[in-house]
Image 1 (cartoon, rainbow over the protein chains, first blue to last red):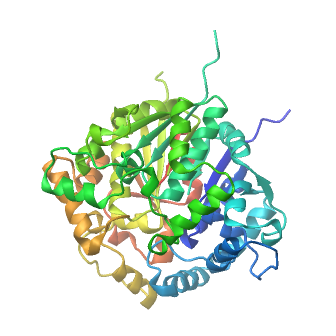
Image 2 (image 1 turned 180 degrees about the horizontal axis):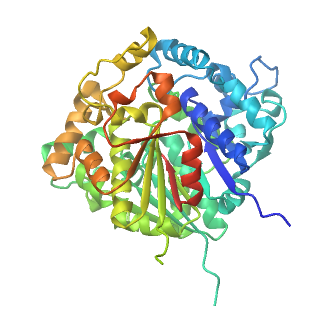
Image 3 (image 1 turned 180 degrees about the vertical axis):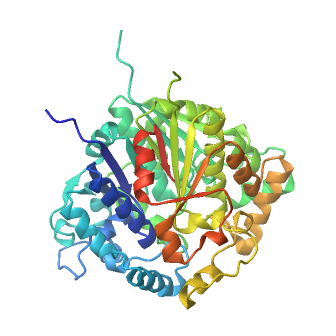
Length: 160
Length: 160
Length: 160
């Protein structure tokens, strides 16, 4: 019988590009070391999982407002610092390309290829009015109970 | 003899409504699963524990300034994102009511009912000039040593 | 043979004065309790490790811009809240002096004296164009793999 794998969990609460990059670099690193990795997306972190194109779904007025005001997908997040009306994210993306670092959308794809479990928090999806059709394929849906189940078994648990 | 309980600790550093909600949802979830849960409130996180009414206590000029500028209690926190001059928190509170989600003050009460240990960091209380009379009843007071003692025994430790 | 030491790791992602103070108070506390402590500095957290004086190194235009816009060292960080165009950090520093609390540069020195391992993330150094000559002496340089190695052995792992 095999030894059970080490587990790592990350709650990605933040919708900032720089924090999402840090979360995915840690997650992909842990997956490369054969950890079982879960990223639990809640609140603004859910924006990382949105599809880039506008998806037509029925929703109420307030849910439409949230949907309109929040960035659609990993390619459109802003920075936690030095946003400079959008120049900061452009600079970061530029230096990442120059150093052949993976972009955030590429980091998300790599995580999915490596079997990192991407879990959208159903409670905040409800609050922000996000529907499954609006999020990337291949992700899971769960609540805080599932997160706690994974985290209680894991050695490394981060809130980002 | 009973098995010792799983332990979970959260440092709530942030004074943002959305982050405080996330912290209390995780804490209440863990308590429901019979974890022994401690939330350690430090820096702006202490504002979650302030009483809503102004409390008359003697303090210096600078401490008065801090007390005046910082929000009084869980009902008055702002958002980490989409603050929009106070409209963002109103929107979030509205959708939470609509979905029958507990408000932050209700989450705090539930945590106290479930036996979640709420600990105010005495060092930052000193720095920000907050006095015990200004904070909710039923909370504990301790320093970083007590936090580390709890955290070293816990499986899940988060900094929010 | 001695029992192995408890381990504590902190990822310091944030470049905010208040968050850096919290990180170093926890790290120094854990070191005082004889934990083996590592702080891994990434993204804006690296600014805490910058030397105060401008260091002349060759770098490209974009790296110069980053170097110019980011604060040089622990003495110059801003606050995550209540920045008030620089008045907030002055107020915090003032109350810390008044309460005989160690300043952030003093907390960094204490950490080094206590043997806290300060590790600069080489990947984000590359991205932000920071060079070893610009950072404090006595620190280590490593990537995400080294962090995960430390974190998988540690009881307390925080992302700040």
